[in-house]
Image (tube, rainbow, N blue to C red):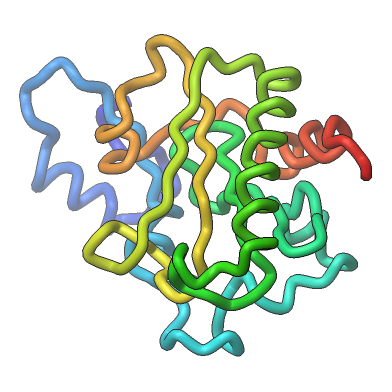
Length: 190
């Protein structure tokens, strides 16, 4: 698709006419809904727990807020702006920004929950590999700097390499709610 889809309005059509795509072999997938994330609309205005999108998610909100599983000190949630289908984040309940500031119990559970995430995604989604990582601080790429979170990104041969996934839009083959339901159903209970 080299032009924006119909129904985006006159401004989008005028923009496409005024700024045609470069003459290359790339196909463009127009995803203007991602501008919410790029523009920072859902990012907290400060580092306080009261404005953190992760703090205050109650078990009653789990399905709506895409929480896949809960442990004693950490929980697992689907990324609302995924780099790839099934992109999870493992994070402590406690509002803490630095890995070195985790308690011993949080550190152990975060690691074990990450292992469980890999096992569950392997069984359910059958990826061929994973990217794991934490970005601490805005300069390191953290979108939400005040609440530490570990990314668990499933990968498949030919999906793309990691840097283009971060820098570009990615088409997702499944709705987040459907992915959450599959992973939550397969998550082992204590």
